[in-house]
Image (tube, rainbow, N blue to C red; front, side, top):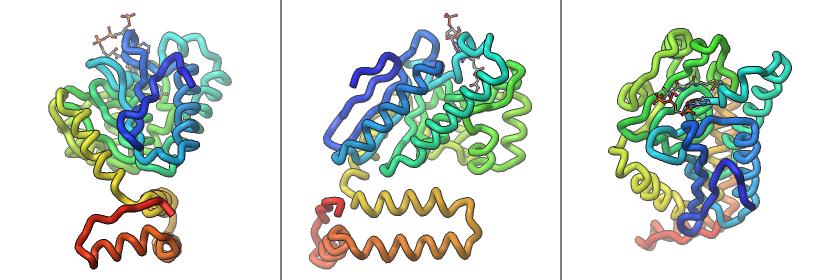
Length: 261
Ligand code: CAA
């Protein structure tokens, strides 16, 4: 499938790259781009060979500088609500994709861009990346999950500060705050992302899927129920060939070869 606003490509067997491709507007998210993200995400889910998805922005300036202000500026309240609902649906569907999804943030990561990155499983960033929720500067609130995912990642006080001042923080500060896992020089960011993806491709796909699902479902449960969910996932993983292979490989001192069943 061809997309107008994104590029979806298989870089290496199992490793997919989704690039938001509107560099002339710092990859701002209009409604068509949000729809493209959903279709691309669905295409990846349907591909049984897909093992990892990397998400990045085209060009050297921005990952995504937010929702498209030009498109939004004449929206009514109802249109704004519907845009928010659609963005939230799409980002949730990306978040629950049953393979690891890594945000590769190569520049400005603001508003809807920060919300897109937070819908990925974790974030790596280049030294020139800036993060923020500057919606207050435009007289609006965050609309694609910023008020909810940000406090879960960096805590309430820091979220209050970012959303109420509109301040941008550097990649280093974002790392210190727990929003970003690793910061790399811009020139080596994609190489580092690929190294991580190649490592993940060697792991058991069912174990990855169960682990991700348990973390996502468990994080908002009480601890007893969340731990019960974990034990069920743990038990289920023993029903796979991958578990037999993984443990046999360890005991035989060789590398495991997983088949995802
Ligand atoms: N929407 C539409 N166009 C955008 C955009 C956005 N969010 N961000 C940047 N652009 C466009 C600019 O209009 C400009 O286009 P022109 O050349 O046609 O004028 C081009 O991208 C480059 O931008 P600048 O000239 O402003 O570049 P800069 O380097 O001076 O500044 C910036 C970069 C700090 C990121 C600045 O562009 C900026 O502040 N952008 C807006 C950031 C923002 O407010 N994001 C939140 C949007 S609201 C939102 O996301 C709601 C939500 O939660 C869903």
